[in-house]
Length: 232
Image (cartoon, rainbow, N blue to C red; front, side, top):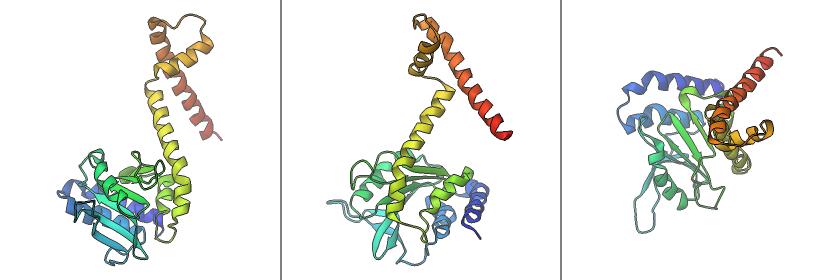
């Protein structure tokens, strides 16, 4: 079975079972371990996957991350897990602490549905605040599957992932900003367009008037492009 088919199969599994998963441990077993297996790692081989990996932090001993993916005795990927219903933003500080004290270059924070991938693009050995890659397994797109495939045991190369991580991170942030502007144009964007088509002053009344025009215009351009693409 191809990798993309394995991921689609896991998607169906998560959608079918999630309402019956009541604990974090069940989330790991039903959702997260299958993904690790799909990435080519033997979850029952402690030389490849170490559950409850000890990551001592200063004077705090015995701190554990849920899984560490290993290569040649060294962790290359840390995975911190939560119950599928939990909000991941409440737990990124925990993964940050683990990341700092290990040799792993990448960290994943997941609830078995959402997956957030982190590295250290800003400051070496300090996990970035923002993930460079993320996806929702219940609605994963083909291009996201291709990015995920880079973490497969057969293709995993730190240099390859790192070289594309920066572009991927900022591209995703820009798309998020653009999506927000489409739904609700900011004053700065309204002023930008207004200044090029309107000779009057940018009064509060005029800004409010052009706000809806800018919003409709952007949405129309996108709609026209999609229709044009469909006719190609």
